[in-house]
Image (cartoon, rainbow over all chains, first blue to last red; front, side, top):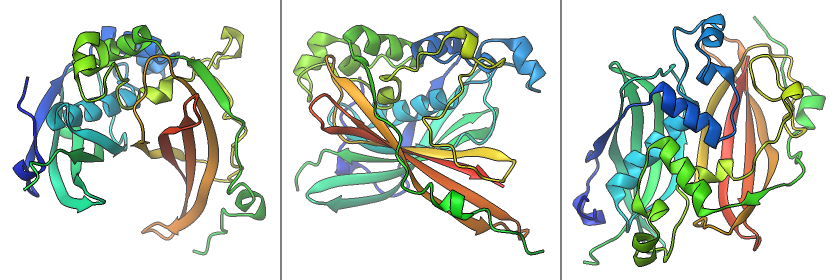
Length: 142
Length: 167
């Protein structure tokens, strides 16, 4: 379990600990089932081919869930994720996905310590889903 | 090339239009765990009762983004399209004469924790529709759909804003 991150530990440009995910066909099936999503493009390779794709597609919101996890793993139990935004820009297929990010702003508002971050899902060296996130970090209270 | 605006009076009239409210199922530890296994996030705050009770929220909470799936769309097989998707949009379909559609992105604000025993209700509205000129001079329409999720106490737990792009 990683050490708790504090507001004083980060600066603009601080890199978020990368996260590696490996969405498999099985995971896509379980995610479709858990989210009650019957879209064939995520579990039926023949249908995906019919729509012009070389394989089934990783769901946009599943890529969003990966972005959530890169933040929540990094901010720790005492951090609070307040906002996330993302765009599913390029197709993402079963296989390794690396989630990365960095701090773009840190500020205090209403007594709370915020970080804004740029985050993204990457596959085969290109960005599939770019996004942003805002979290509140605990402060050592200096 | 001067293009006719997509924002007709009929389109403009959709701004502010609200859908009906929809209430979901009672959230359980089981359903939260099922989602966590599916996204492969085994954070103890979501699935380990003993650890969660010692944590900052005093008990199990759902992971961020779970709220979008706490209200189930229940569609008979006969009403699914050939691609497996369901029809309908809650009555908030904007009659745009733009043929090419893309999902522009989604933003979620996490307001309060969601816990086992909660039941969520959602209500959507068209927050805005506006037009911008692209670099080539053609017009692009942006539709912002906002969905507010409240719990059984009427407290806002999350807000989703999705952007649809049409040209």
